[in-house]
Length: 559
RNA sequence: GCUGCUGUAGUUCAAUGGAUAGAACAAGGGACUCCUAAGCCCUAGAUGCAGGUUCGAUUCCUGCCAGCGGCACCA
Image (tube, rainbow, N blue to C red; front, side, top):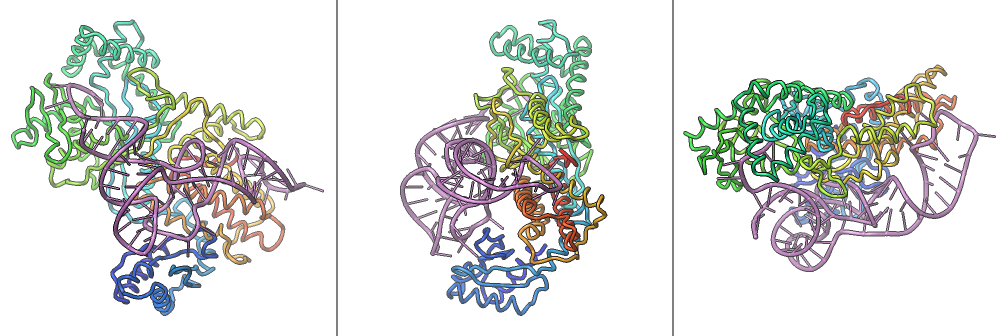
């Protein structure tokens, strides 16, 4: 990583000059600095400290940088008010390409989290409720975060957590019984849940019936068991199909029916230590002490809430996969709730303090208004995938590929995942079901299409007997080659900030640059320059493939 | 009322306190006997409002406005 080494060196130089200013090493804006690869505002930052003019400081830094003669630098210059532009040596780019080819699937990995054990918990759909596009979002984000962290050398464990007990289940069971619906049918279960929820809100007598079912669930009930088990199994089977489609597998799956009793026990014991207290018959955690709000952990009926279950889950996590860091992906609507739970966990187990964290993502909303599974106006994950797949199939009618069904699936999933991952995690996505997802321009399929082009050229090259050669005949490095060398740095940043969109944005820039190059450059031109150009193509292909993998997106050979 | 996230082009998104705020879609124009046109080239178009800090603010601070969310027995 040249960027990191450059930054270190510049910090040393600035310190030698007598300044403690902090500064960044950036990629210079396009065209502003000719062909420079890095730019730094070190001189501008240090100038005030040193009481000198920025340009003087810049010259001093350049002199010292020249003295060090870093082997990967070919040129250093001062521009504008005092920016220092650094150009990498041409060999760097051929070496980058050679490395991309030899590292293959490992190209772009880093060691920033080597030796640590990290849990990533995501997806978390609840049996008896639909898998809606919000779960699609969490699954997409969690999967990408997992892969980014894995790519940084950590040992990771993927956790999924299902709420298979609680009022929502009671509502669905009530609906199934009352309206004679079938627990073997996933759509009936969804309807039953909506019916149960409406009854719960509108009719106090029916609410009583549902509360009674809820209580019986926690104490174990022979009469409810068959219906419950069937509905639970049907829901989970449906989730499994969706994970297959999305390419996610989990190392551990934990259920609230399991964590509830554990959590309740821990909370009761901790009352003696004053961590929890009684209030109106319920057991609560006074978040106000920490600038948060009070939340109920055990209800006045004696049943554990989601909060207590989460405590039990935290304990199970330590048993199943002793970890240094836990990252739970939650939607922004659960942000405040999760802060309270994390605080309670810190108080319970001081030795693990700070290891129980979460990332918050925005919500997927319908353009018409809030989506609510309670009311039944949800878009399910599958219906969205199916709609986009239909658009992909339509598009593919013109092309002649071997397995259109599989490719339509890969393209549809790419379109959806990219739409989620191209933006900053905290932002909401307003989804308009009328307008189908774009498969052109800034989109997942655009990246796949660029990859397909590389694959196609490589196939043609093989037929023609042309081999790639990273050290073959080449001219001045192009912006495409320069871009390739950034990949490991981008991946590292995305992993550090837990922001997959950096990778998504980079891949789009790379694809765009590649497509421009492709339009103006004939690779297999029959000259001696072909083997190096082919190496570029191969390196671009490998970078796209690895980058897409980090986003959880497949790289088809044709489309 | 208190509080969290988000406000950038007509629309959907970028931009680690730096250089001329980048893309894509939509709009308008163009190129192609050549490795896949889901592509390429060109044109036009944006930082919610008011202050402050700074050599420099889309970015940090304060206030306001708008959208979405949270604020005790749902998850």
